[in-house]
Amino acid sequence: MPAALPPSPLWGVQAALEPIGGGHRNAVFRTSGLKRDLVFKSTRRTEAALFWLTPVMDAAEAAGFTVPRLIPALDGALSAAGWTCEPYLEGRPFAPEDIPKVAAQILSPQHPRLPQRPGFLSSLDLIEATTGGDVDLMAMPAEIVALCRRAWQPMQGKVGVIHGDLSAGNLIDTEHGPALIDWDEARVDLRAYDLIRTDPENASATEKTAALAWEVACSWGIEPDHARICAQVLQRRI
Image (cartoon, rainbow, N blue to C red; front, side, top):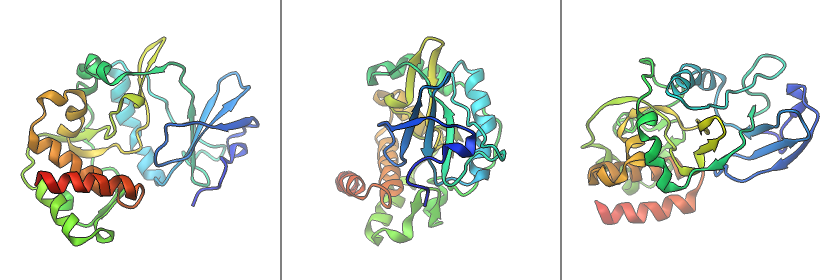
């Protein structure tokens, strides 16, 4: 478990901290009074999983996005005591209807052919496997697991690196152009999951159902009330 408050001295930072919204699964704090304000986030990710993001963010920057790079702690690690640090980006969150305006940028990055993010599995892997990333199918009722696997079974298409959480709140309109934040759920999976968020009108019913099943599975242990509501919708679709 991370410390209750960010251990900012581990980054050599002495500043006031205030909690900010936006982190549904992790605590998020912002500094104030510094030349460059920082954001501290609690994390469940390993050092290897955080390091995996480096070439992914390289590709996003090459596509024209500003990306908040993780700032190493004084000992060089990307996380310390269950927390990460990154620069605070000034700007306004996108409105949902603004996402298609940057759809081409989101889908264009030529990410390197990376292995799966350490500790993660794709939805296709979880048709047979049980645990990876935020998903622990063994902790879910058997009938819900069966529904999720039925939703993933017919999925076909390109597999590659995805952001995994392309909500309007994770796209920031800054003075330097669009910024893409919160890479916590990035992994190798079906590219359709990012496409659904950028062009939902053209997503198939099969793709939408598979994405809903993923939301159920990855939320079950972290946001159980939300997961159960999604599971009820999933039951009606399958």
